[in-house]
Amino acid sequence: MWGAIIGDIVGSVYEWNRIKTKDFELFSPREHFTDDSVCTAAVA
Image (cartoon, rainbow, N blue to C red):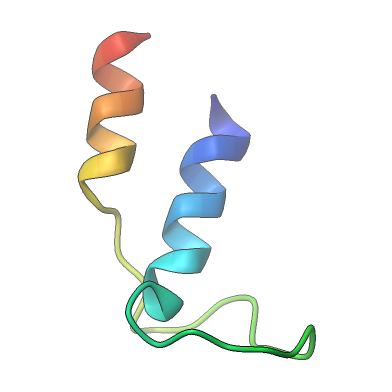
């Protein structure tokens, strides 16, 4: 569960801006949790 939530937060910056490289910033001040994180916690 933690992996899914952390992956959602890290990927939130790139959700609408697709990237095609493996060289990207892992932690950014623009990151935020999304509804996917909320749903994951609710189901758990």
